[in-house]
Length: 584
Picture 1 (cartoon, rainbow, N blue to C red):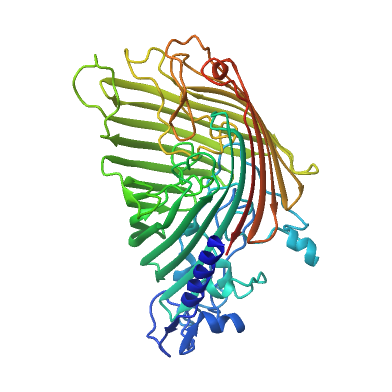
Picture 2 (picture 1 turned 90 degrees about the vertical axis):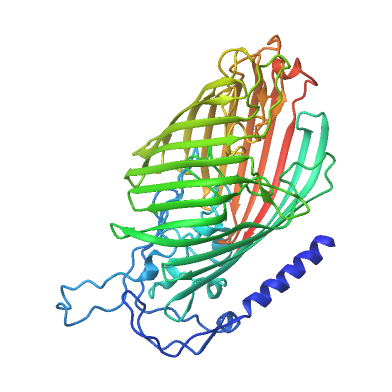
């Protein structure tokens, strides 16, 4: 009842926001790159747009999109009619519209062991089946279908609504890309997510944990031409009936997930460059090191600045931030003792291949416990990370290679650590079910003689911890060897199924087993417990019910090895998750 009442208040608030009127002048002076000077209505309201067709600028056209995991989001567009005195109509191409780059086109990054979406004729959602909407090709995706990918809401893309030839319509269209006069653009949206969790032997504690987690998100995205952007995203996150103490990400009441401004600073080769300042989510590459990490109830975010320039072939992002610390019952605040900064570059030689080169720096002055015999000096750490990734597909072959090296200072020790990923596979688009098969080896170094010599435990920084090492969150990218086999397939175009099998071993017997959050799960300082962590088998199925709705089921079993059995209760926990997501 408490949740129902709270959601009712939020829906009422959203309805109030949706009823706000925006006054627009009947005429506006012509501007270079502006929309056609057709007189807009004197008042544009979201409420009116629900019951009448939304006025769309007639001269803006957007290309379609296929697989959002492979190709850039649609963005090229026609624009205002050309000056007939400037050239002959048969030879003159109109200049691009300013709205064709708002928001800037992005390419959804590929996670490890990615799948490739089906194409061709068929039903692309359960709603298509119910209404008999047999499509000749995939629909346009404003966000990635299936709730298995991690993409911030501020990268949602509804530019296809500006295409006068668009034939894809939806009930949320009136609150997306609301053109106010010639210079302003507003979009509204959000998400409601509910997850039922049944964890047997949760967190290797020997106790069961059955609970429900709920997440509400609401956002507003306001642009002034392509020059300025204000983005605000609210979240309310709660967990109910947990038998164990809630994890740090389970509860976060009434807070700001994102609150930033973008300012255009220049254009290079026709593509805008922006500086973003404020609270924001960060996602880069495979998200093995930097991710908002969507599976936890409250996503990760940062306070700081980021500069970025993206083109069809090249992307450059530079940032300086402080991690945000969740306060369950109050507004979140940044960790003023930690600095996270970096430079991330991406080059796409083809639409299906990507090369990432990056440098990341983390400095944390929070004291770390050290032996009494340790020499005097700093008790925090700093770590520099250099890395590279090459990921893609060609014909039937798919691949994912990534290497990382770290150096720096960890309390009184120098750091020398590394991690590597090697993944190869085969994709058979011509076969039934569109299957893809992967074999992976993941390695992250540990400290073989803790407290002596160099500190060798790899620091996983801020990863998407759930999507790797078996989806149990019991294992992180630190002191681990993981040989795993994975497959994805589509029984129909609207059902994605996956299976994984992981063989997990410690890299260094005297170092710890670290979980997805980077905390110590189990440790034997003598090393006598061995390195056999265990095996994990995981199955996932995602039903794409409609453009807005996904239903996901996950089951994982962790069969403990000798290391787990020799360092505490010899548990083999089971995890079952049922999650419903509604985006709008």
